[in-house]
Image (cartoon, rainbow, N blue to C red):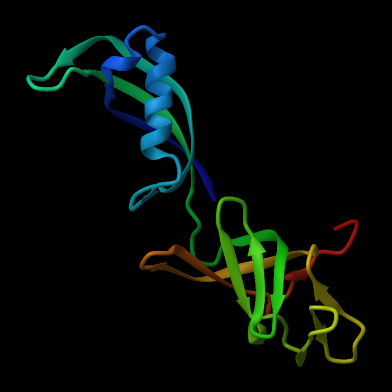
Length: 175
């Protein structure tokens, strides 16, 4: 789920950027510091939006920068258990599907693709459901439910999904 989060804090403005407009520099510094960061309370920070920075800053001894109070809005991606999402299939392997969920990727193990028996076709790089009438391949859009979210050291957030429930699966045209 995407959320807009209001944040109050302090932004450091380096001395080499003193000649530029304060709000522009504050926005650049906040983007550099927060975008792409996974937070415990709000999820993954996707973008920094509307920045309001105090024109009065403080100088700390030994640091030529100024420190300004700031308020900004962060757009975050914070998936939750049992959330239903749609994503494009990025890759199909014999172990499952990798989905593009926007700012993060998700994974659907082959056993979570369908109630039916599923086989991997290496020549087509596709998963074929029992009977051969239904397939899932790269570029398809699927609807899935998040059943596990974990933090993988060095790799960030790991999202596992299932399509084994009514209303989930490959999204057909017109749906």
